[in-house]
Length: 211
Image (cartoon, rainbow, N blue to C red; front, side):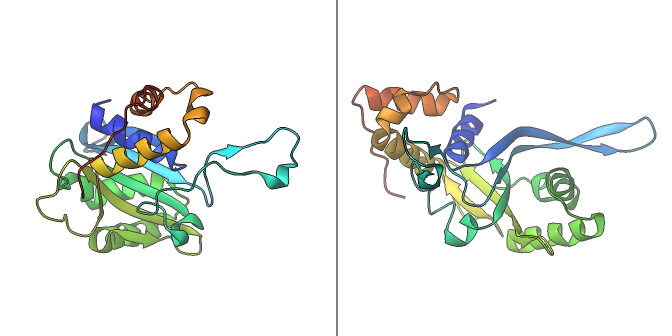
């Protein structure tokens, strides 16, 4: 896994998403012949109201609350009440979509693999994603979004949500600083989150440039 994908995966984890990285999309050409179309950098799903819950010793389970609120740039009030499925392209440089990443074949494969949607409906969901960047699954409390992460944006990619790496880092650094005692009690395996936790423990603050 490259550094940019690890960064975005850590950002999504801290916001309550479960992820699969570098998911291969393979096309069947004949009975015995196949070819790889692309790898989807990150597929992520978040259930309604998800977040790190902190049980409190001696407290009733009805008092359990999220340790912190998700990033509003990623999870607004509407999204917090939905099952949210993300199809993510991650770039180290310019935030842009590869043609293969937004092809109907790629989108339908991702949708059918990770959501409960009928084959016929998947085609319409893929078209909505291609033209709007967001689709609601019929008869379900589920949305699908097409997202791009990168270090900079020369021009806004069409029909998708864009979040820059510096925003991800700023949000994670803020949480690491605010929740330093929590981070100290955890064994963090994501390399980006682990580094930010170490920096916070060391008294080093990160001040990202303005977006």
